[in-house]
Image 1 (cartoon, one colour):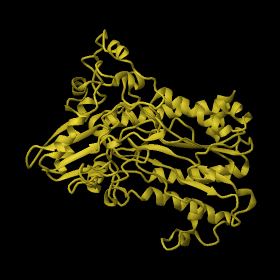
Image 2 (cartoon, helix red, strand yellow; image 1 turned 180 degrees about the vertical axis):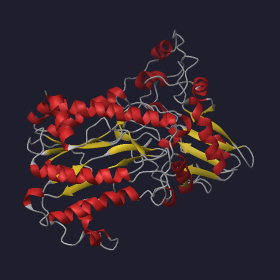
Image 3 (cartoon, helix red, strand yellow; image 1 turned 180 degrees about the horizontal axis):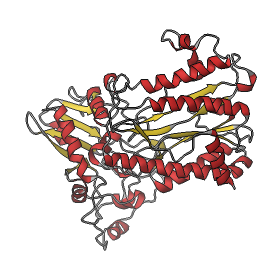
Image 4 (cartoon, helix red, strand yellow; image 1 turned 135 degrees about the vertical axis):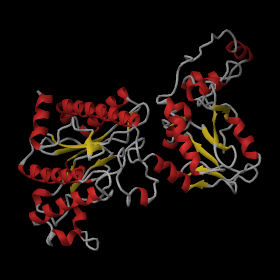
Length: 484
């Protein structure tokens, strides 16, 4: 594993440190231990997760890095979030996990010993604690020492500097999680022969996360509940946002404040798309003004401190009331979403809910005269003309990532079947581009998506985000209450 440089991460404009100051900085610091009973949230769940991964790769060394810091500008790094597989296996979620590595070391033909390689708290001797801009406690905050990390996780913990010693020794077959830095041969600077990033390891780790346990579902519900509050905040802020020349950005800021206050932040970059901007699937520029006669498509989610994600979309009339054309388009998308939700149950094919939603969309477009062929013909796999107006799929798995388990193989995900404990979104949409001459003028520039989070239950699915209204009548009543 390519390790960070051993020298101090200082800035070119930092003040020099005299010998006298260096000596003074090393004296008279009180002990500040972490509480002896502190554990990572969900502490008792992680051994079983690691055992399931171990069973899939007997006799092989598995390397799961948290990830590396990335420079934004000069000595400023982007805010760090550890890799979701690392989080799922360790419970460690903080920004202080940058560069850390979990190694599952084989203990024979079966079984592994998990070992964490960490950059520990800097001692009060030496200059790192007050001079290092990346790791110094006085620059970025306290991190646990090795013993504290062992108590937090229940794992054997080693200094990150010792990882190179492990990799220089006898090498069992080694798999490194794809999408992270490979193990590098220090002599050549190239990946070693047994350490190329491994797609199979990434796939297995994704597939192990497909079914959520009750604790995870609780975390996801918490993320949803905070997201509902964030949507309420946005509606209350609409009068101010409507007056601002970049009202979309005001909306983004209001929601993001709630996400940062209640959790780790947002699950993804907030989409606050008004008017024709809503026809751009991932509109994150959010630099437009708000027209009270238009719709606002708000796609946003809170990520909990344990890094579980919500992902919800509502399309709201900025005036508080849908116009007749807006209502017509909205109710078609709502009917499509309701059909998709009705198709969710254990044993159903994953693609069934999308097909159910798209049938409603195609039939509606045909009834409007937008599709000039029968809906059945448009729905055929060798045709698909309705997709001009829908563009993408109708949902995805949800968990530690807002597009969760994305490295899973097709037979377990896209071509697989739903199982109790899976959590996913249902989010059909209509994206009627402002320059689309196949559309009547009154429909052009309408973008509508309705997205909810659901958990598959023994006999169907539970709507986790039901606290947010979905029908035209309920949306208008909800907005009126919040704006009064």
